[in-house]
Amino acid sequence: MRRRLSSLALATTSLVLVAFLVPLAVLVQALAAERATGTAAAWAGSVAATAALGDRDALAAAIAQAKGAGVPVTVFLPGDRFVGEPAAAGPGVRLARLGRSLTVDTPQGREVLVAVQGDGTTVVRALVPPERLREGVTRTWLVLGLIGLALLAVGALVADRLARSLIGPVAEAAGVSRRLAGGDLAARVTPGGPPEIRDVGTALNQLAGRIDGLLRRERESVADLSHRLRTPVTALRLEVDAMRDREDAARVGAAVASVERMVTQVITEARRSGGERGPGCDAAEVVAERVAFWSALADDQNRRRSVRLAPGPLPVAVRAEDLAALVDLLLENVFAHTPEGTAFAVDLTARPGGARLTVSDEGPGFPGSDLTEDLVERGVSGAGSTGLGLDIARRTAEESGGTLCVRNGPVGAQVIVDFGNP
Image (cartoon, rainbow, N blue to C red):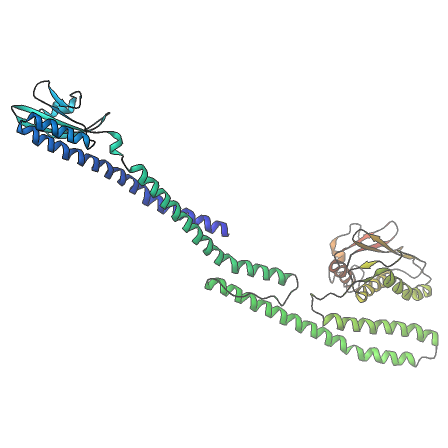
């Protein structure tokens, strides 16, 4: 846009200069020709006055004086005689012999003809060569051209300064918009430039403040709601402590502890701003810990499991709590949507730029023969659940710089999650 504004200003300045300089250049040429013609006419009149006196010596002196001034003069006497510069009597001279004084343009230059009446008609011819008609024109045109270039340079500089004063605030507003889109809700514009652009900056700042306020209120609301869940979770823990069967109490207590841990994570996540990401973690350690946690339930349901974990450390750009929640979500889906006794597998491998986690089962697979993005669309489920689990997993993977893919494998369903490096 800056280049366009500068080009527009230069084009406008060029048109103004052309409209001004071209007529001025034509006028300069006309004035130079008029000046040379006037000088020749003055010398022709002086020689004509001398010729009227009939003094041949004075006439020769006047002709010589005019030649010295750069004006060649020829005096055509009655008959075929002439005095001064040799020249042929052209149509203009024959017309002047009728008693008329005139100016005629010829290939040799401009002739100034003065008729002198006496014993016959004497014609004084003063010739202005073409170079005298344009004397000083080239130099004046060069000066005008330099002035035009200087004006163009000044116009370009002023146009660039003006364009920069307009584009600078717009570019700043665009940069702040990109920072806001990237999650930096503290980004603000310093209003500047013309009033209209200042209004845009002020409105963008107000919008950013409004978004920040809404997100803060939403995070606090989620945190408050999650905090209220602590009371029933605490009540469940008390009930577990009162159970007589220690084995069942241990199993239910582990489930309650998992719920309590998830509630705490929700509170922490809700109060954390969107741009704040914690350090990465060792995926091998976290996945191994969560698989071991779910192994007890797998044994109770007679589920065969295949666990293949790459040797650690295997760093990924995901917080340990987030990765643990993701593994829990994927394994919970396996236990919730496949019959008891269905085998499952967990594979964790290294890949260029991160790690890959694959959770597969030997169940009925995802509904439908053709998988679509609806399987990971928030709130959409084909198995009667809330449809939030895979969406949470997808967002965790994307925030690390990876992806999530769901598909039906050779036997059952497969969920493949790629993580990026810290």
